[in-house]
Image (tube, rainbow over all chains, first blue to last red; front, side, top):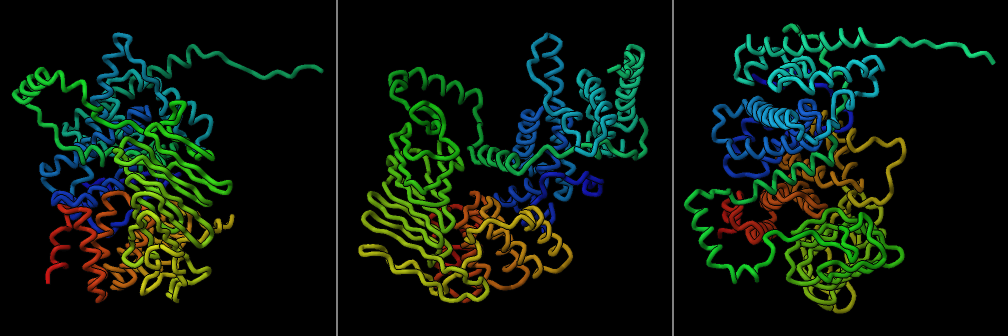
Length: 215
Length: 357
C-alpha cells in the first residue's frame, strides 16, 4: 500500500524541503542500509512532518507525540533489514508510529484507571483547529476529544485514521495487520460512543437566549 | 462509520509541526542512531555489576558519563542573545564590544554553537573541554578546540584573530574551504561588495595584516550571493515559498528555474540557507552537469553550517565535483580533508580512490 496516494491535508505552517525529491524511498532505504546516514536524514525529512501530525492527532499530547515519532524513526532505521519491500517504507513507518502511539495510549489508560495519569492533553483536535474552522466545528471537535480521551486505544486509532486522516478502513486494516471486520468494529465503537455522548449532551444542555436590556 | 471517503476532519486542522520541531526531533534521532547499540545481556550485566563492585574506589574519581551543557554564573543555560560579558561554568569567557550581536544556536554537553551576526567578540574557551565550539558568521564558521580568539564581523568582512591555541575557519571564500589559524595570526576574509554570483569576478580578498596566515583568496574567487546583509523586502517571497518554487521547477523538469529561488534562500540569514546551497549543488552536479559550480556550492553549504550527515555528504561530493571539474589538486585536498574527518565514513572508499596515484 502506498500512502502517498492519500489526500494529506496541505501543511499550513511548514513545507518540506526534500533535497532528494527525485530519489525514491526504495533507493534511500537501500542507501541507508548501506550505512549512508544522509539517506536516513533524507527519509526523515520526507516523512517526519506527516508522522508528527498523525502522532499528535492520535495522542493529543505534543511532547509525547514527538517522543513517539523519534522512537519510531530510530526503530525503523535500526530495523531496515526487516523491511521486505523498501518501496513500502512509508506504510511500514506508519505501522511503527501507530504501534508506538498504541502502546502509549494503553499505558495512559491503565494509569488513568489508578488515577496516576498526570499528563495533560495539549494537542487535541480542538486545540489544533485551523483558523478556517467555524465555532460550530470547533465545538464538535471539543466533544470528539472528550469521547476519544476515554476510548479504547485500538478503536481510537482506527477512528482517527479513518475519520480524521481520511484513510479507508481497508488501508487501516492492512497497515495495522488486522482484518477488515475488526477495523470496522473498532470504528463503529467510537461512532456509538460519540452518538451516545452527543445525545446525553443535548438532553442536559441548557438553552440560552439574548435579551434586550432596557436603558 | 462507513468505509466511504467522507471529508476527513483533518481538513479543519492545522499542522502542529514547525521546522524547529522537526529539526530538534531529527537531532535527537541522529544522536540516538550514533550511540553504540546497547547489547547488555544478562552475563554482561553480571560482569558489569562485578566490575562496579571491584571498582568502588575508582568510582569516586570518575567523571560524569555525559557532560552537562554549559551554564552561566547563576546556573541558567546560555542566554539566547549573549550579554556584553559572560563567564561560563567551565571557565570560558566571552566579551562583546558594543556593536556585537551574538546568539546561542545550540548548547549541549558536547556542542556549543553561536551565531555572530555583527561586531567584535573575544572568546576565551577553556581548552580540553568535552564540547565542540563553533562560531558561525555570515562569512564563515570558526571552529574551536580550546583557545582565545577574537571574531569581528563587519559588512563584507570577517576577521579572526587568534591569541592562544588554534582555530579552524571554514568559509566559501577560502581556497579549499577551510583554513587553520594559529596563535598570533589573524585571518581576514573580505567579500566583494555587490559582486554578482554568475560573473565570478575577482574578489579582492585583502592580504591579512602583518603576521597573519596566507591571504584568504581563492584562485577562482567566489562572489557571494549568500552573504547579502540586507533584510528581504516586505513583499519578497518567504523562504518556504522560495523552496516551494524550486521544488516545483525541479518536479516539472525545469531544473534551471530552481536556481534563482535557491540562491535567494542562500542570501537570507536563515538556518535553511545551508540546505538551499546543498540542494543547489546536488542539482548542479547530478542534473545540470556543472561540477565547477557544484563544488563551489557544496563548499558554500559547508561554510553555512550543515548537520553532521549532510556535512559528510557535502564534503565528499565537493571532492567528486572538483575531480569532475578537472581540479585534481583541490579534489585530492578535499578528499584528504574528508578522510581526516571521517576516516571510516561511507564515502571513504571513493575518497581513497581520488587520492590514489
